[in-house]
Length: 248
Ligand code: ZN
Image 1 (tube, protein in one colour):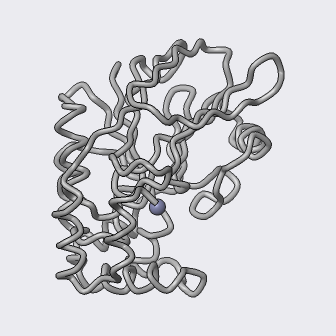
Image 2 (cartoon, rainbow, N blue to C red; image 1 turned 180 degrees about the horizontal axis):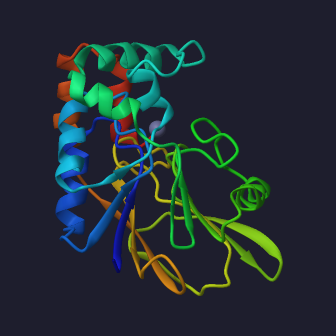
Image 3 (cartoon, helix red, strand yellow; image 1 turned 180 degrees about the vertical axis):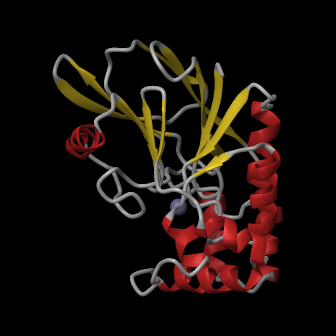
């Protein structure tokens, strides 16, 4: 496959996921990978899982997926996250609950390792520094990693022996990367961006994930108000609706 669509942290935000798929327009040749947290926080868990299933997407387990299917204790979650995990657990159909339970916590394809958090703590570590990016690559023994979990689009790249992190703030940010470059990329979040930009964030990768690849970050607007009103009618905590319009 020479086209890849890499996304993370959909968080049951169906209108955001639909907007991403419409914009990216994946065909049968596109490998769709979601780096965990399809569910949690948002109002449409089953529908998001179904839509990704329709795309034959490769899913990883995220901490919110694990919490919603009973595979993770939620006592360390903040109260809003815990409330939404309980709500999601009650909403999930049993086939979807089973599906979540059986998700892998890592995928290896080509030169890439895929994780929700990091190779060291696949479900829970936030990679937010150059140093963590470097140790994550060493731990996974790969040249390239794609991770989610922080909801912040960023590219860490080794350049002349040192790692540099670069937050990706715009749309259509493009990087051509040769096979010798070690990198950690985060596509940002589809359903709950936290970098101050409410638009859904994702990455497309041209190339077969080995050798030279072209990485492109995208931002697409979606109907935030629809998701907000679904959050309210589900009785989920109000701050989970409000944060979406601020991208926080
Ligand atoms: Zn998340």
